[in-house]
Image 1 (tube, rainbow, N blue to C red):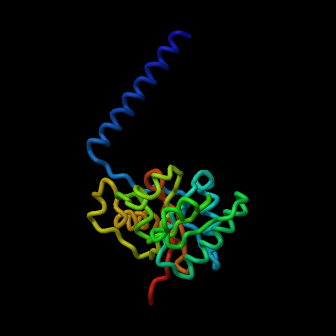
Image 2: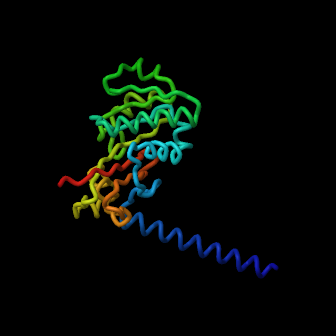
Image 3: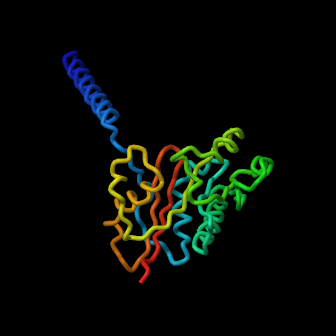
Length: 218
């Protein structure tokens, strides 16, 4: 029994040493971090309702805690408007709470931001709803309110997207590289060229990217 315990202890110690060595190697070599898949590429329904449903289902705990939902979608189009409308419906049905929307959050006053009840969707430009780089709106206007938030960026893409070579060497991804690298990773899963797909990726603690496939121009 004692011998077994010693053997287990030695094995655990060896595993810890190996894991520590791997972590040190990754840090020193500057291995770049890729976005994490949350929703695999899935065919979009004609009305896009399943996009909103998938989003609410997959982000259930994050949405439950977030007071603000930064929605990087401006300028809007008919497709994004449908998804937001269904998203509000799905959220209300799931959490029994209506969604409040500030359609141009950066133009809203501090009082409007403060008084917007949970859940409050803050609509922003597509490049302004993430923390891949310093985000002045979040740092100066949201953090002082001391309320939880998550960031969702609407990302239209085509199956022909290719990542520039320099993106392979980025250690901390920029939006310009995160998008093509994420698309490149899932291209083989877009199996039916007659269908349009969506998928969801995560990067960092609060950044979520909703990829919406667009038809190729003929």
